[in-house]
Length: 371
Image (tube, rainbow, N blue to C red; front, side, top):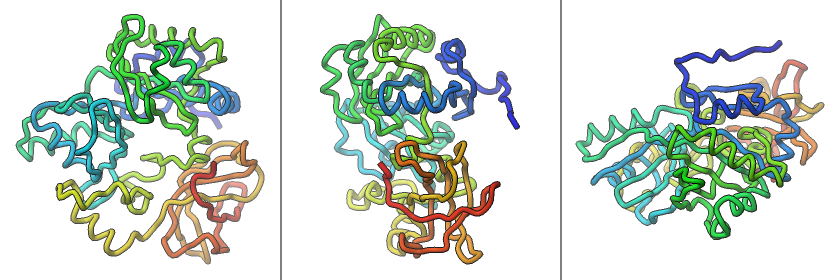
């Protein structure tokens, strides 16, 4: 059975939308109220390009929230569990955001552009509204808004060579999660060494939405020598690499989890003395110990034909966790998954299984990352 997604005016198109259509996008998903390419009709080729070469992704749906003004640092510090006081201009940080009950509501990357100006590059939830409300309630002198910024990613082992061709050899000295404001053929952007894969790469934060097709074509043309091609954030590679996917592995609305359960406990800072949203709840969770843990799974049986999501993990007729996503790994040559399991279930437990359309499959726990 096949389905289609309607292209309506209530969902926003990215500046790269027309370029991705011209390059043969065959499936869109919706992320942050925007269309985001899911794949271009050749999943095996897109995976291979990411692992061995270089792929280009429209990730404009990774929307930015700008926080600017005299109290920008105060607001940003209150929003995240992490101590960001030592963050330097030009540096990015992975910053968990929680609600007042300690549940993760987003896991963005913070970019510090100046002492009183930040971007947070968000996963799939309405953080702009949340941050704006908190700023108003606390009476902070700050602006919270979405800037004209649209990321494109180049990912894969040849991404650095491509970036050097485009911008110059200086890009090789950019450290992971650091960035620099620059331009390409007159197109203003921020270049960051980052991206949602473990294959190395960069994100190009376009700062003029009218130039999306121009930027896409420039990168595409320069990448021809590296056999570049379009793709999308890759489910198989992310599971192999143990990357958290907010919305898939946890979402505060219907499968909530806290940072300690998700392996992010080291990013919850109680020692700095700063207050932050969810601090009291998270301190209690740390004291009591998390009830679940984020882990990998190996699933028996024939190779899965497509990614599958949200399957209860069962032992002795009792649900003891869930497999958030499972895929067949070409590099490991087995089915693997990622998700949460009760804290008292360890890697030696047997009798774990899930039920799929083709029957029951045995499951064993595995440490992350797989690769």
